[in-house]
Image (cartoon, rainbow, N blue to C red; front, top):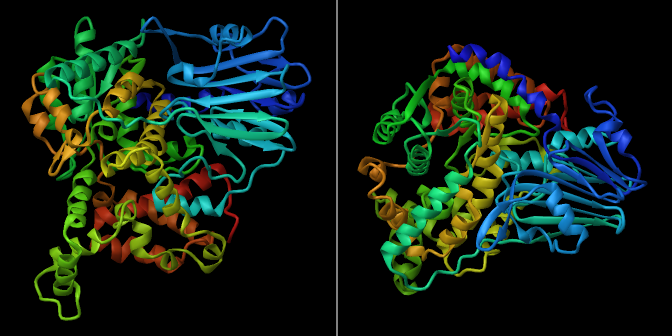
Length: 619
C-alpha cells in the first residue's frame, strides 16, 4: 500500500534544506554561514563576490559574471515577455541582461519565482519575490551582514546569535492561525511580501512594491468572447505548468478550480490524466462524490483515500518538524496525504487550484458581507428607527437573527470580517496571562487588516475583500500549506490559477460579475457551463476540510495528543491553564468544530516548539 512508503518520503523535510537560494552580502562572512550545516556544504558549494558576499546554489540556478563581481540566483519557474509570448529564463539570461544594463527590475519577470542579485561593483544586493508569494524569501541584518534564504530556518542557522521568538508574532498566530508577513515568528527576520523587492545597500534595507493587483474593470465586451478568453488563458496556464518529461497529476476536491484544472489536464495528457482526492468518514465533511463525478466526466485515472483520526496523529509530528514556524490550518493534513498518494504513484508535479476563489469571488464570506453592506444604503433616519425596535432597551422578542444582522451590519469592513474570530470571541484576557498582554499590541492584527484592505486603488468593497484574501488567505495561508504538504510528501506543486495573465484578466472583471448576492463566481460559472458538470457548478464550496474537532470527541489517541500538548503548553506560562482546561473540555463539548480550530492552533504551536526545542520569551 502507498502509505507504507510515507516513513521514507518524510525524509524530504531535510532534503530540501538547500533547494532554492541561500546567501549573504556586505562582507566576506560566507564561510561562517556554511558552518554547522550538512557535510556536503563546503567552500566549493558557494559562489563568491570577493570581499563582499556569496550565494549558495547549483549550476542550474546560480550564475556568476566572468569577473566574479555579480551573482544571480533564481528559484522557481521564471519567464520574460517576448513578442507577446512568454519565454523561460534562467539565472544566466538574467545575469547577461543585468550586466548589459537591460534588466530594469523584477517588473520584467513573470511566473512563480524568487531572485537574488548580489552586485559587488555597486555593493548592492537585490531580492524579489513573485507577485503572489508562491516562492518565499526571508532576510535579516545582523552586525551589518545581510542574510537571505528561501527557508526561514536557513536564516536562523546563518545568524551568529539565534533570534528571539516574538511574543507579538505568537499573539498574531493565535489571531490569524498563521503568522502574517512581512513579520515572522522571529524578531528581526522578515519575509518578502508578494510583489515586493528589497534592496540592501550601505547597511540599509529598502523595500518597495513592484507590483499591485489591478482592479480596473474592462470596457463592455462581448460576453461569449470574454468567456472564450478565460478558457484559453486557463488552458494555456495548465499547459505551461506541466512537469516536462515527468508525470503531472492534479489535486481534485470536486470544487470549481480543482475540477477545472483536472479537466484541462486531461486535455493536455496522452492517456488518462491522474487525479487525487481525500475523503472523510464524517457527516458534512466528505466531498468524494463530487470528485468521483468530475473524474468520470473527464475520464481521469482517479485515486482516493479516506483520512482517519490515526492518520492525523501520525502526521502531526511530521508537519511540526517541517514547519519553519507554527502554522495553524488543519487542512494541511489531508493535503499532505493527497500529495503523498500522488508521489507514491510516480507523480513528479501536482497542479493545485488555489487562488481561484480569491480572483473570481468564490469565498462564502463575500456573499455574507454583501448582504450586510445593503444595510448601509438604508436612509439613516429609517435605520435609527429599526435599531430602536430591535436593539433598544424595549426590543421586541423573537428577533435574534434580525438583531444579529443589525449588530454586524453596523460594524464597518474589514472589522466585520472578524466577527467570529476565536481570539476576539473568547477574549484575550481569558486566553493569555497578564505578562503577555503587557508586551503585545492587541490592536495590531486589525491594523494589519485595515492597511491591506484600504491599500488597493479601488472603490469597491468587493475588490477590497479579494485583495485582502489574496494576502491573508492565499499568500500567508493556503500557499504555505500546500507548499509544505507537497514538500513533506516529496512532490512539486504548481498553481495554474495564479498565472499573471489570468490574474490580470480576473482583475478586469466588474465586481457584480464576480459575485452578486447570493450567487458566487457568477462570470466564472457561466464561462465553465459547457465544460464542467452541472452538479459541480451548483455545489456548495467546501474543500479539503478536516473534521478534527468532531473526531476529538471520541478518538482516544487524538485526545491524548491534545492532552499531552496542552500539558506542556501550560508549563510555558503564556496561556492561562484554566483556559486550556476549559477549552478542551466544556467549550469543545459545546461546539466541537468551532472550538476545535483553537485546539488545533494551540496544539500545533506546542508541537512546533517541542520539535524545535525552543522556549517562549515569557514564562
